[in-house]
Image (cartoon, rainbow, N blue to C red; front, side, top):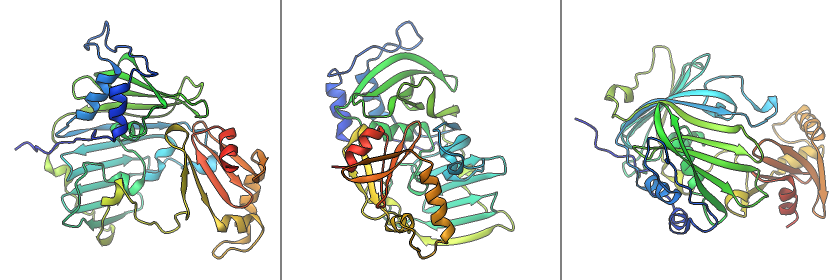
Length: 373
């Protein structure tokens, strides 16, 4: 029997509704589809379609490509770990059979890393490390239809998840337009374009390729300001909109694998308050909103290392290495003090001499301004 669970991922915040209603303010309502195989649609119509999209099941291959201009030391060597999505090109296979049946497998040169949810059971497996974990969800776990890997890895694994994060931030600071059609994974799609109005953003535009039949985003692209090539892209290379067989959601640990039983875990706070993670920065504050939001937190340990003090668990070489890295970065100063700036295609960071760290998809001048607020 076909699984009747649906994927309703576009119950997005009120901000989206505001754009649908008032999208004409500061936005060009160019119709997509003129002269193509798809009927014309305005940006407002596409946003409404995204809100109402329902998918009962799918399987496919997703390719992520990132060229963020990160230093070599901050990128991985091509393994299959979840955190490696931020650099290079990664391939992932996905299966979705409803909120309680989900599987994702990141493929690497040396193996693969899997995430499987089947009802209350959640498994992870790394063939490269020959390790697996098993956890169970509480009976009252809220099925939000959100991909659970986001709650664990903190990174989007499908084009629609990446698009959801983008759309949730839409407000009056965004220009929303359409730009004809495209073909993604052999399927015709509308091109929805979002551009920040604030010149302080390092993002030039974000393009969503919205499937002409299902209204599911098949591709999400992020372009740096003034850039013609996407700095980040996540897209389906192949997709089938059918509920996968149950066998894809069954996991049997391979012989000899190192198993870790985690017991009951509650990840239902993934859309609200996040569970505290060991080593997570304290006093995290977000200044501003939307495209030019800046996250700021203070690291006492970093401040001590920069001052040449000994920090528990860190060798003297650690502090020396951090100082050498910072000395290689451009310096900035203001009434608030001085610091160093790390820059990439989309994200910039300011590390002050007193241990404050400010990060955002904003210009260096904006970070300096926020530091002195």
